[in-house]
Image 1 (cartoon, one colour):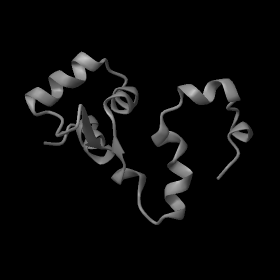
Image 2: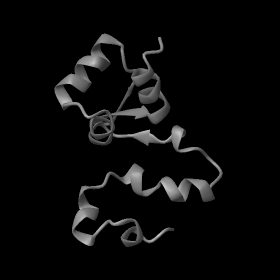
Image 3: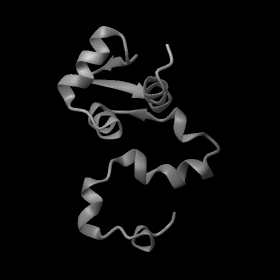
Length: 88
């Protein structure tokens, strides 16, 4: 995996980086796309740059297709990209 300090990320900043961003380089080794990654509510809100209430509203309205898994919601990154493009 690429050293994160080589791209300007310091140790103190690592805690603030969602797991899916750190795993981008790892997915290339596993021969599956980052588009197929399952994101948590926190990661999805970070990716979309929206609040949790707005995220949950979009799920209720059916604008974002997500699955309730345990206590949280899970969504594919490709679904978030579809939402951002405005595709139906």
